[in-house]
Length: 458
Image (cartoon, rainbow, N blue to C red; front, side, top):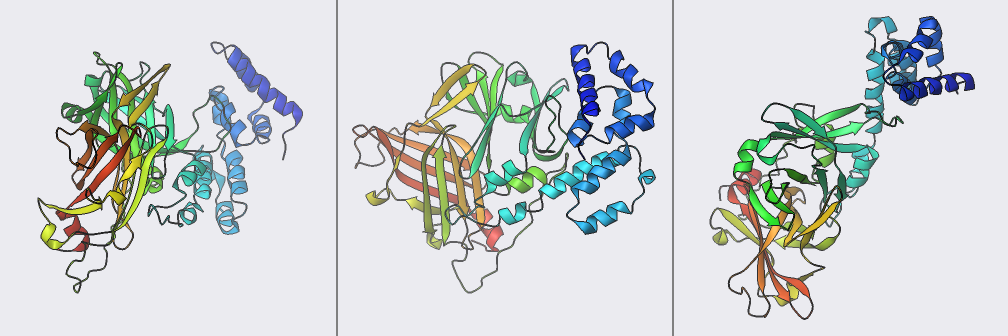
């Protein structure tokens, strides 16, 4: 039911009065106090959820009245109009059985649940190229998911920050939080917490919209900063990789933070962003592949690799490599070796589009760190299920001696390592073509990870 013009005008007048004189809310307070609560609640019953939530921020009296259970129960039932079973269940509950504000938050939960009814179906279509749900980015946008970084310093003060910008690629999303004087000095950061946040779809400009929070990461920054790896720098900033995927950029010759950058791989990103609690992360269900006592090389063959190099603006290269394998006799140094691009097979060598740099922007400043980019890697097992997933900035370093005499230009290497495996990528610079060529790409997976996944004992 549409609100009468007089009511709408009066609500706008209250909001305008509050904005015009925040230090003296007496006008709106007096207006509310002149009328009985029953009449005020009747007036408020003409408002939709967005207006009702907004007017609750005017003063304490309107906050109490705008949290009335009868108002929000009506909105909650209207939200469930298409689901008759749930609507009947809600209608049988008495308003007086619940404390004030119960139906307000029940409405927010209902809106969130209604918005998640179809996301699992949308994630059902798997890309044959990446082995991941093809509509991950679309589902995240449809659900209104954003990410919040909580930064605590050594004194116990903490601040919550929303991303300054984000960029989606085919298999990952890169987020950036600019310093702008709001972040503690690099050496003062104590902990970092990342939450996925789902905001309720309310039209309330200038107000913090309610939302559910799902803990995704909690880092002890004091320990990590001691072992941070400097992966690149330009004349303004220095990039410190504190753990795979997580960069803290510090202004050169200073201790203040320029920005914090994080890359999140798409594997179960929707679930991790919305299904955990504010203090406990989502736990991925354990999936045990079928045991095979006939195949002597079970877990050593039929891998598929999708890998991409990109920056914060565009993609530099991507490739899909199937039927990767490692012979049992080739297992060494605690890893199985999967060769995607062979140095001796020139037909496999892959060009890189553009220069390998990592552009950044912070407030009014722009820059680009040479010889850095972001690597997104998805390794699928023989059942085409994600086996090892990586999203992290990486750096390119020159090789002291050429690794291939088929190319006269300079040679470089990009490497990555974590507890699950390593990646080695060798590149040659083609002066005439003004481009890099990837002449070798080898993925080494920890034998322990293979044994655990496939119930083997290599």
